[in-house]
Image 1: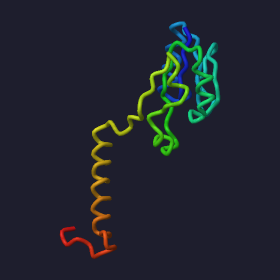
Image 2: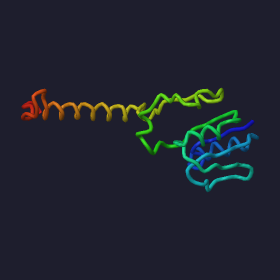
Image 3: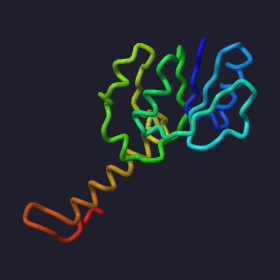
Image 4: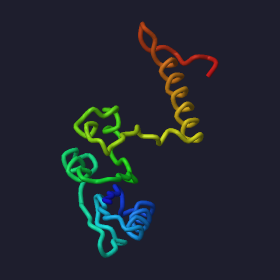
Length: 136
């Protein structure tokens, strides 16, 4: 069986790659940087997750695909849901970025949204800027 670990040079991804290797899988690591933890028998592809062609080529023929890569370019997340050729592969299940699914992050996002709204209401109306709201 063949497995690929995106972000396999990192702490979590490298441990998963090692466990897969010990279980007899052919393991490929896909990461921006070489892995200092690479074991004999593991293969590494130095590449960027934002390079759709490289990702597509890397996952072809893999039985299992694991993603522990970080998202360095948050603008890339604005084009989701993804509709490219990766969605046509039988061995790929795409998930949305779930960084906002923790309670703490969700609360911070909601708090910032309210602050942004109050700021906008205090500085602009349909007629243009006005004095801050007295309740703030």
